[in-house]
Each structure stands twice: as C-alpha cells, then as structure tokens.
Image (cartoon, rainbow, N blue to C red; front, top):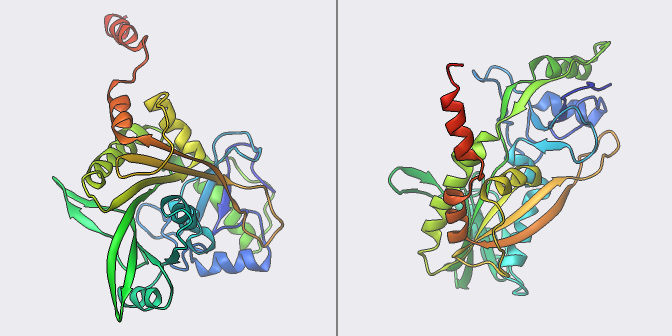
Length: 313
C-alpha cells in the first residue's frame, strides 16, 4: 500500500511498504545499508531516525520521478561509484581502489595491492579540511600511490564532491504510516507526504561551493580532475541555472567532471534497487563560473521592474 500523492520511495534502502524480513531488520537496526554505519537522516532534534533515502518529486509515481535525498544512497555496493571515477581519471592504468577504515587500515590495504588509489573521506581515513577564507571540507579525495618498501609515496589525485538535495516541509505523517506497517500494525491508508524539494539550494549553495572548491583544485599541479557526483534530477536543476555550457572531452584539474545517477527499476521485496549511471560529462570550470554569474532570462529585468512598479497595486 502506497500514498496516492507525494511519497517516500525508500526507507533504509527498501521500498517503504516492504515488510520482508530483510526490510524489517534494516528498519529495526537503524543502520545505513550503504555505509554500514548509523543512519543520519533524523528529525530536527535527532530524537527520531527517519532512514529516508529517496522520495518522489511530485504526485507522479512512475519510475524516474524519484529523487535521492541522501548522498549516502550513492555509496551503494561498497562505494562502487568510485570505480567510475577511477576508470575516468586513470583510464587503462590498472589502478586498485582502496576505501573504508582508519588511516592505518587504509595504508595496510594499499600496501597489499598493486597501483593503489586511496579514497579519503567520511568513514575512510578522514575528510580533508582546509581554511580558504573560512573552513572548507573537501568531501572526498582519491589519491594514487607508489609503493616504496613499507611506505607509500603520494602521486596524483582527484577531488570529489558528492551531493543530493534537501527537502522542505516534512513527510512525518507519510513516514508514520510506514512505521506502523514495519511494526506489524494494520494500516488502512497512507497519507500523501507534505515534503517539497529545496531546489533553491542548487544556486544558493551547491554551485558556489563547487566553484570555490574547483578553483582550489585547479591550482594544484598534482590534481588530475574534479568530480561532481549527484542524482541526475538534481543536476537538471543545475543545468537550468548555468544554461548550455559546451563540454570538453576529458577530466583535468581545470575542468568539472559531472557523473549522475538515478534509481534503477523496481525490485522484489527484500532487495535494494540498483543505481543507474545516467551521464558523465566534462566542462571547463571557468565556463561554469562565468555561466553562473551571467546566465539570466532576458525577461527577468523587465519582470522585476514591473513587479516593483505594481507592488502596491
């Protein structure tokens, strides 16, 4: 049983009305199935763990209308998304991805493989933070190494920014109906969710953040790429803001490489939906910054002027 309007699409990685043993066990554990750590999708005072991975973008329930709202959902299959970056940045170089664990564990694992590339970020070593007119976390960095006996020598690296989208409003009543289902109670109907999607954050936060971080990476000779990884539906809003920016063929420290995903087709109870790779494109970062500043609707100045003239009726 599902809501007729806006709806939660996944709870702890499973369809919200999935009451299989696997889905109920995930619900009871309150663990993120994609990071093997505690779920961080909570209410405002952190008294309730919601476990919401994705929601529908509107009343349309068709596949493809779902939006991933937790970036950790993109870490499915043991950070499989990093393999796309590995192949893109170090094409045909037989690199070995190393991720997850403490700094000491990462070093030990890297020494045990050939041509290691270590992913540094939350839950994998540590997040790299710098001060650039304010504290800034570099989300993920993948750095390649050469082995020298019991030591590792740092070579080239890529930066990664992994984002989703926040909601506005709330899905509390919608979520509570699914809670009762998971707990074995009878539910006659599921109310539609009251959530919206905070698209304003794309131009208020996401794009400025990408430009600031990209400008730092562009000035480091060892950097061979900067990747922006996000749900495809969110990137479409990104495109609306920047307009039509010409692409280039390869990653580099002066480019922004975009990789987008969406949820694949529905699956049987007790299973997680796969992520489908939608696109992988590269843009000159300078063109992105220029488009963000200069791109505007031709009608916008006139509309603003008319709104101000008519503000008092």
